[in-house]
Length: 251
Ligand code: NGS
Image (cartoon, rainbow, N blue to C red; front, side, top):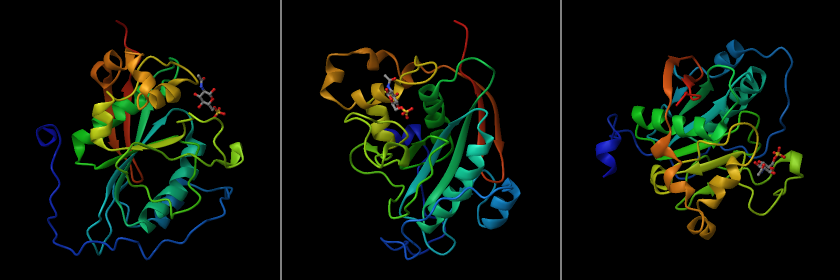
């Protein structure tokens, strides 16, 4: 029973529901990287974003509640540009959203998938999200007609990236950005914790949806059920919630 695990959402303000298709959608943009951009400038351009990188449409009740989970360490430059584009993008889509940065403390090898497990738990602890976007820090969405909402099936979102000529690099590619409901996530036991360093974890996640997973049983014993970490801090920054964790625990 999910409602005993997670908070349940109530519409307290009794605002009308937002339209099914947001009137603010603008279509493709041309991504540029303005020099000298600061987080203060991003903040100034997004006056309706609340502390912790939280937003709700001011005049209607959002139809979707999406948490953006971004694994992070030492990529401040990427993060700044992502926030610059992502906040206005999500607001044009009239979503109820929050941006979570999951920051790996220490110098031990980076572990993207385990940080996403942390992000899931810490985000769901806070609010009743109906969709989680697991998002690389160095990818910027170019077209707001691609709404950051979940579908009935797990969704691979980063299917057309400039560096791959706007094509999939290979058929089973599941990296970059993906969208899962809490139920999808629980069903697949989250993500693997044992991929330290670059590569492979997204392929493992992809296989969790596939028949092949039946022959590879590791997903049952390596996932959200075994993700151990030590929460170091939770900071409500102006443009995001910063969750710092130690995931490289000694046995
Ligand atoms: C595969 C990796 C994936 C990675 C993809 C694209 O080879 O994790 O390349 O990489 N799989 C393994 O290492 C088993 S990229 O071109 O974005 O650097 O996502």
